[in-house]
Image (tube, rainbow over all chains, first blue to last red; front, side, top):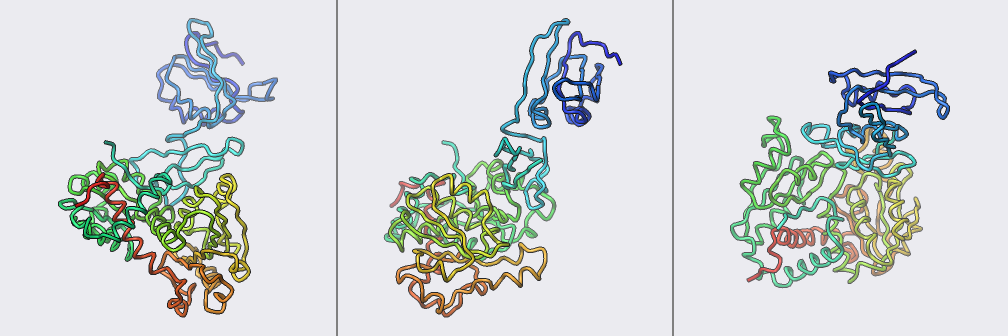
Length: 139
Length: 309
């Protein structure tokens, strides 16, 4: 299967196989005018299988969303056919409007105008705590 | 100067807490000095759920400082019944009042309110989350009775899982030296693990037991709590657990002569009324101390701490 390379745009590489559509939706890539290729189950020496997303334009990316979904993703910025920047992600210390608090007694369940804010408590267990009610969120 | 709010007890430093307790002592010793400290100032007591002690305590505190009180004691008599958000209500009330005391059933409501209000916000209880002014009342009671906030053995007994007053008081005490904590509860109502981790990390010695009588002889303070019916999903569990611990004269016989008994109230069965005349029973003193320290807090958050006449 052949997918054209990106001349000026972004390549999200090393996405855990199966997670590309989650990223596609959370980043709102369906709203872009430029071409977007979602490639699933690409063979990877390191991971066995991986997903890749190619975006044919430069956009502002929400690195918190990416880092939370999969901290192993690499972000490649390509300009005029050359790799301009390669970034490795990490689990973000804070999450804003990425996940929702599941505590029905939390103020976020009724006060819809406020941001859903979480802070990282334990990197190893990927535990976050709601900024408002302190309820823990473990994926 | 940026406004200050009190959402969580750890918003205050240890020095600030000690300063508040000193101010509360001075207010008790010489109340007349503070009769007009808050003249022409208004406290908005916004109580979205029922409260007896806390609301009356805030209102009494403001009246004793010469200020006035506005507000509501039922969400249905406010614009919340029309669907107004907490944030909007706080913006509106900030136009009328100089300081807000908020009680709300949703956890985190006070934090949202503080972000929206342009005047200081005091968390008067946000669901099962925090209740920092009860903690100030508890600390003032301990200091008045034991003359110190360090080198104490404290037993927390009853519902340690959902008891917001327990969580806040432990958070406050962890910052003092020589604190030893005994957790006494049934398995179903044990203290959350993350608080135990925080105690260990801060060097607090703690133990866990289900046996109140065995723990009693070592304690300087026994902090009893109510098993809260509203936290249970089925009545059967509540009925099974509610009378796990009932403090009566028989059990108290093993306690030190100077141990004090505390309870945030309201009580149901967990402290027998036969204990009330015992000089070690301090739960009604906590109520009085709560008003004193809320006066000090209002003065501090209004930036009028050093002003007396």
